[in-house]
Image (cartoon, rainbow, N blue to C red; front, side, top):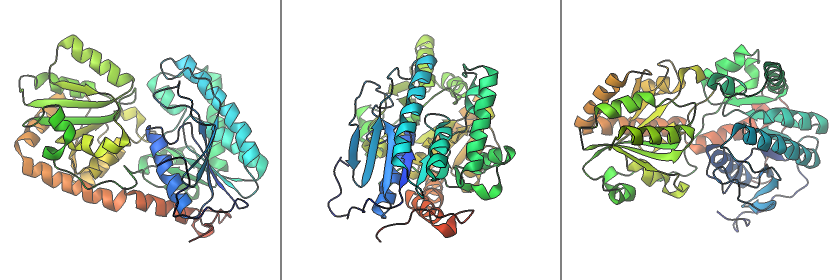
Length: 432
């Protein structure tokens, strides 16, 4: 991928209704919302939709990066706006970064949108839908909310919302207004749909379109074929993997308790790839306790994702039960695409727990049940045929439910007038 038009695809003419996405990050950023937006934006552009993206000039893990203010990425026109660059380490700095993105993106949206366009608000930064709603109403455009998470409830549940209660309530009302004014609200699963219905959002304004791993994921590979596994000297080990952000929403004490119990089994290794506040805390705890069965790596390039996932025999995902319906961990999709069993630590009635049981691709464990997790891992370690069967089940489930091509087709159908809940006009492809 580069910053030039794809040579084999015609460029759509400019005087047409546009799809305008707004999210803080886009290609070449590697964060989850950026990867999803990049995949969807490029796919829709190649189908003929005039696609624009309003984002920041920095990267998720490097706020000092200064990307081009304007760029054509394949057929997607990217508008990168100015923001402050405090980064994610401190809440007050992050809040200032958010505020400047709200202001800058509002200015660009007002200048960019025309009557009949559709603005699609992802959820980074939180509550950007309020800004998108205001711009859409001012310019006579449609609004679609693409909900990767639900704020301010996430921040309140995590206890990291520094705002006064009065302001939180005001922002909540603004968010609800944006949900009600949207033509469609795209959510990631049934539990998130239930949350919106509890807010009073009409069923006809809610559409489930699940996320995916990669637009064109490679075929799953055996652990023995993983370059990373060989480089780390993990041949002959039973590797429990984690790949992605480990943040405040993710519970890891259950896994830590299991790892401590399994420390004497020297062929068991926990491979942690990624970052986040939870990853930092886990690393410090592992060091303080002197646990030798962990390996930590920073984020890896997306083109190495399949090899990194293949390095593990099984993977784990977690979500604090209070956050069910507010977040769906996106790393789940990559695990299934890699044909690996998955153990979910969280609410047994959670979104992922339901899918795991339906597909028979792994198991779910309650928070705090470290002994149950130890028994599960020992069983999986001793039964490679069982792991292989669960991995194949998960891969089939991914192809049937979470493949990128399926999601793009759902978006395409939704963007046609007949696919809209209210029959509203929407952009159509300029070429077939």
